[in-house]
Image (cartoon, rainbow, N blue to C red):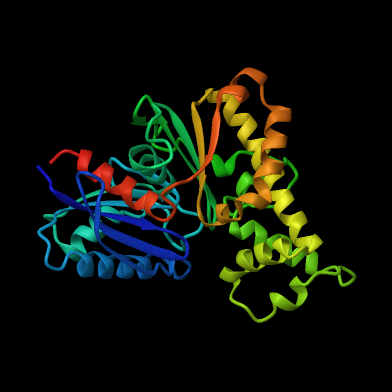
Length: 319
């Protein structure tokens, strides 16, 4: 029986890993840049560094990994990852086994599925049987737990909530479609909306100064701070995020009649700026009965959700 495993959560910006025991206690953790935008080869190098460093002094052969995109978990293959360069149809498990050793038992799953498992196992949804998680980060992901089991669909692609169409003629998404939820409720979407707004030279907003010469990853935080300070344009961006999210929530409530929806990811840190618009829109669009019973909560575990979900998946995998 495994006493400890390694859980890893790969994001568009950061790569987080931890040693986790059977009770969900984190004993050691590590965080480095994922550099996913530089391509799959660089990401693999960083992943190998994280696994090697965090396993020092530990006898661990079981690793759970969450990665954004469509994942063939059975074969350990990244089928499609719009936010990672050159990652389509990439044999991640075999690449890591070749690099780190064939004796490693590596389980791979979509990062949002792992986050959902983490929140169900140790977080906000610990006391419910059925839940759905929406992760708002670089992109928008989702995971579904039904009757205590992760639901991944016929081919492992269930839960791609970020690619629900919200506006049929809306902004182009990284997946190639138009008007996806990800195009309106992610960090990428916020950066796009800022850029589009600043193209209007007559727009009066503090963002014109505060976003100049800053790293693109800092823009959502700056928009949050500006909105809290009363900047009207920044507030309107968060309202747009909330409306799009609310439309998506209504669809999911009507479809699944789920007990709880948990919303997490870095963008969800601006909760108070968008959740009001989201709940108003969802209530206006969803059927009354399932909307009345569903609980909509902010994620409890924050950055640890994906790590703990990956660890839980590894703990439950065949030895």
